[in-house]
Length: 204
Image 1: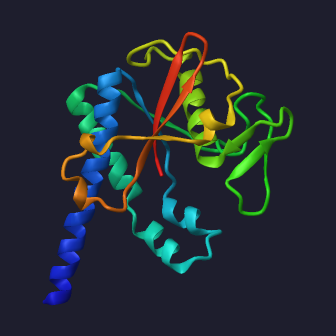
Image 2: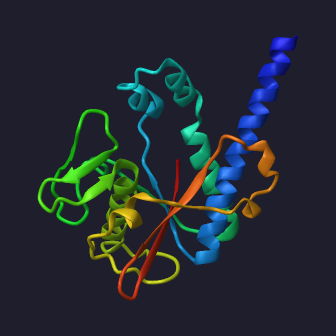
């Protein structure tokens, strides 16, 4: 009985976290009048993520995470607020430099890589967000749909290392019942151009 109650409590906590993630993403997109870009997940996304991870505890946490569940929650909240959700093929998004379209070289297990052509330094997660966005924009050029909100200069511009790698944290005041999420962190990667600003919300 105790084991069953513990599982139910854990499941309830996971659902709570899932909806909080969806709320912060959709709320930000709605206020900024942006669309939300998500990657198309394979049949077993967790298996692909843990393939090269040796830490047993981290492998277990990733395997227990409900990536599809989070996406479904985002979709549901987005529909409530009229926010567009765009799915993009994530293939090679962390491997190619968005400035030159050339491979990024990563040493060993480092998450910081260097563009083989221009020498720009990229964090694997940040460059993936850039490339997902660029793929979404290219796809929209050939469809009847358009991004919600402000126009974005899609030309890739070399960024300083600080602008690319150092995220700005979202204030705790934006969260309901923040104390119930002690191990969840969120960030906004802000990248500025001459007259345009691109804002992407991503999860650490």
